[in-house]
Length: 414
Image (cartoon, rainbow, N blue to C red):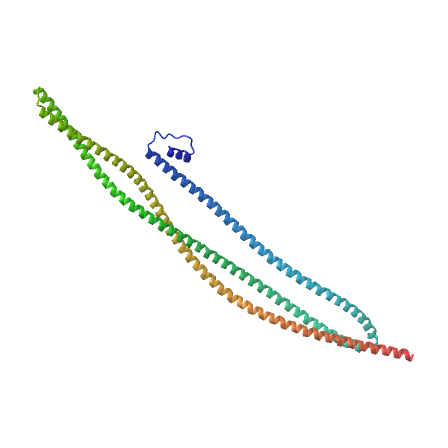
């Protein structure tokens, strides 16, 4: 009844006829249903694990994409901030230059008025002013050339820095891929070692079960010997029964021939009959005992056959695990070869990019030195221009002072 209830629980039914089935059939049905239920649960568990792993991989990919996008936005924000600050500085410089330009325009208009007045009176001052203007134009042209040179150098520097950033980004990507491959191989090796340990444990269990089966096979040989003895006892019992029947027939014939037999022969026959009956009862009891032993041994054999079938299935499962382990070993070896190739490629890329980075660093240092030299030259030229402007302004002031003195003297003389 308990087995029938268990079968009802597994099948999900409410009523199962256990009277129509034997105990062995019920046990076989219960074992089959339990194995099917276990396989269904395993398949459901595998599907759930696969779904969870797929979702985790998708989430990891989305997180990595969001991180990359965030890094890209941070880099763009940093670039925009630097450009904004650079434009602010340029705007401040332009405002200061506009103020200077306005002042220079005002001074120029005043000077032009003065020059127009002086051109009418003093022509030699025009020559000196023209010479100073030529000097100023030459200095402005040189400044313009220097500014263009600085701009080209800055653009080259920006291109080289962008190339360096691209190279570093590629290097970091290759490094991340290499680390991911290393972690994957370590996980595979750990899984493989755990599978090997489980396999060794299962092999030990199977060996123990094989030893138990060997002992059970020896017990089966003993059972066969007992069966043979029971068969011989049954044949002896049949022969004894036939002898008793023959003796009873002889007694009936003897009684028919002589109506008054002797008391001594009757007593002897009764004693022999009692002895034979006792022997028959003893033999029957021993036969019943042997039959019970045989029944128990048959039940034990059935259980052992079930255990043997379970062990065979387990051995097949272990062989499948061995095959999978060999397949995983070959896959791990192939992946190790691929990893080694990737590492060699990464090392080659590192060497190439290291040489390129060294060259770019050298060119960057040279460009910076050239920019410093150009800045120094510009500062020197700006100082020369300032000195020339000061000299020109002093000469203009002196000429104006002389003109004013001349006009004053003319007015006084009048």
